[in-house]
Length: 111
Image 1 (tube, rainbow, N blue to C red):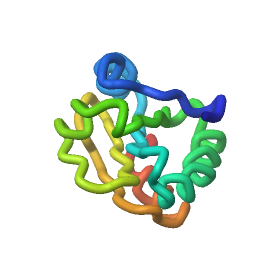
Image 2 (image 1 turned 45 degrees about the horizontal axis):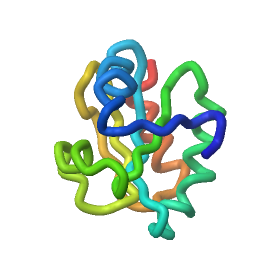
Image 3 (image 1 turned 180 degrees about the vertical axis):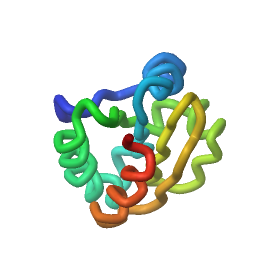
Image 4 (image 1 turned 90 degrees about the vertical axis):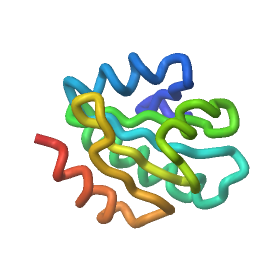
């Protein structure tokens, strides 16, 4: 895990994501250890976290260790990125997509 991206859990999700998204957008990267596309996406997500530090908070949630949150948000496949804003899901990106595609979605939410 990098120093720019913290891990969240079912237990910390309310404070780390829902509450935090009321002050700035929060991107949750839903992933698992066995997921090759998730591992391919990680450097891209870390790069975006560094480049947009202070404008957006990016966190990771391991779907194998945390079952409640992925179920609550109907995560069917990973990697999935959910963008939270104002305590709500504002956007969703599914799959290992190019950085440009993630940035295009993020720019709609970064003021």
